[in-house]
Image (cartoon, rainbow, N blue to C red; front, top):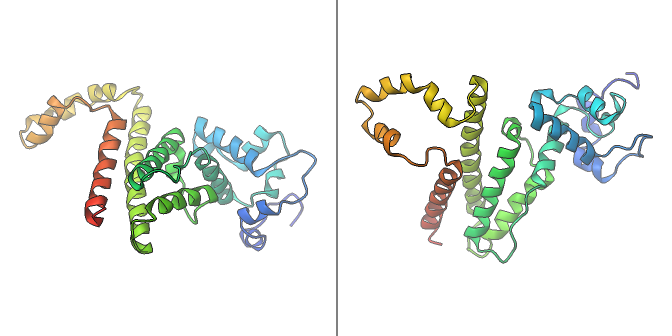
Length: 245
């Protein structure tokens, strides 16, 4: 392998995880890079153009370095994605220890949604082990649940239930936004107009009276934040009732 070729996957593993290498960085090259700078630029590209636009060659261009320079810090695209996810999770302000369990967990859920909506590509990343900032979020929720006399399995199940709701709700929200963009619609109202003929036929069959009532009477069809919070509070109500807390 020449000095210009990327590391293989096995060679990358021999060097330890990206987080281990950050703790013991190699001597800086002539053009100063850092994992945070690489992640910052990669996130900016993904936010503007989507995840597929993020390549090592594109990063080199944006950073003004040689194409192989970033390989001093990340050995492959998976590690780059880890850095990117960790970077955006660092935006979250975690709840304080004085907050009650419900307020703290609710706050974390709302903040995860904010991150995932602001950086819609996060929903496409296939998660492996959590990154340090993701693990800090998990730790914050588990800390909030301390004192409820839950065993560790139950506490983790509560955390997993909350995050499953958040990821599912945000995934639907992001997919809808992507569908609107793909069809050239700028709003949900435009989408309803575009789908009006098809939806009118379905509703007028008389087979879906409750959905028809929603179509005609609902006043918060476009209030995504309200919809998310109602669902979140319903999940929290269920957890509180189940655990009698």
